[in-house]
Image (cartoon, rainbow, N blue to C red; front, side, top):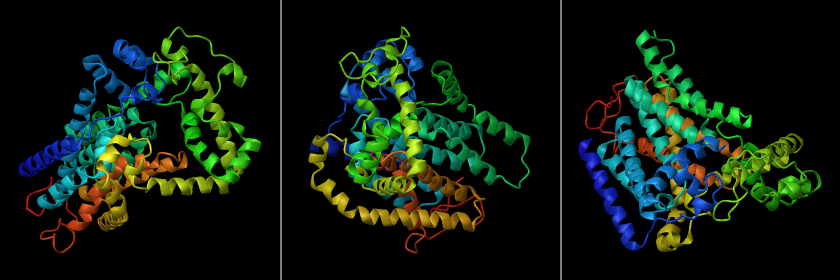
Length: 464
C-alpha cells in the first residue's frame, strides 16, 4: 500500500508538471462574479459568517471560497493550489479504495494514474467550481464506507457521514443521500445481533448530519423552507429552458400555456415589470441588493426566492399534463448524462485548445470507456447479488452503483449539465471497471474469498 501510494503521488505530480509546461493553467476566476451560487466576493472576504448565514444556497463551497479570499484575496495560484491538493487526494483515495476492494497494486496504480491524466480530469481540476470537490467527496465516501463496514470504528464512521454531510451542504441533490447509506448499512447487518457498541458507534458517526439539519432549520426560519436549498424551481427552470427552446413541440406548448418556461430564471424581469410585489427590504445587502459589487446580478436576493415557486408550479403542471413531452426531456437528459464529460460547454477554451488532439482523441475512445463502465456496473451487481450484499466488499460495490444511480436522478430536473454531474461519479465507474478487469484470469491470481469480510488482495494481505 505504501509503495503504491508513493508511486501514485510521484506520478500525479509529474503529470501536473508536464501539463503546466504544456500551458495548462487554472482558469475560471470570473466564475466568482457570475455564477449564481457564489456570493459576491467582497462579502465573502469581509463578512464571511454573516454571508453564509443569510445565503439561501448550500453553504459549503462559499465557505471554502470565503476562507481562500480571506487568506489570499482573488488569487489564481491559491485556488490552483487547492485544486491540485484535491486532485492528489482524489488519486490517493482511488488507489486506496481499489486495493481495499482487492484490485492488485499494479493494476490499481496504473488505473489511477491513467484516470488522473484524462482530459476531463485536467479540465475540471483547472476550473473554478464545486464539481471537483464533489468528485473527491464521493470517492472518499466509498472508501470510508468499505472501511466502516469491515471495522465499525468511530473514526471511519465519522469520515463516512462527514462526507455525506459535506455533499449535502455542497449540492442540495445529495440532501437525501443519507437514506441510501442508512439502507445499505441496515442491509449489511440485517439479521445479525446488533451489539450496543455498534449502535452507539452508528449514532455517534451520524452526528455530522446535525449540521445539515441546522442549515435546513436556518433556511426554514429565514426563508420558510426546511431544505438546504429552496431554489428547486429556479434550478429546474434553468435546466428546462434548453428543452423548451430546442424542441418545437415543447416550445409551442410553453408559448401557449407556460410562457414563464421560456424565460431563463436568471433573466427574469424585475418585480415591477413582472407584476410581482417588490420584496420588503431586510437591511441585509445580500438579500436586498439586486446587483453585486461588480455590477453583475445578485441571485441571492429575496426576489429570486419568490420567483422560484413560480417555476415549480409551472413545471409540475407541465409534467402532469404533458408526460410524453416530459419523457422526451428525460430521455435527452439521459443521453447528455452519458456524454463525454470533457464536452461540458462552460469550460474556458484556452485549456481545451492546449489539449487539442488529446482532447479529441479522448472523445473518440470514449465509447470504449462506456463499455468498460457498463461491464464494471454489471459485474458489481452480479458480485453483490452473489454475496447477497452481506460482505463489506459486496456492500461497497452496491454503494458505488447506488451513488451513480442516485446522481443520475438529476436527469429528471435538468438537461444542460448532466455531463458535469456524471463526472462527479466517474472515478467510481472507473474503479468498478478496474474491479471487473481484476477478475479476468490474467489479473486474478488470487481472488477475494467468497462470503468473507477478510477479502484478500492479490498480494495476499488482508483488505480489512
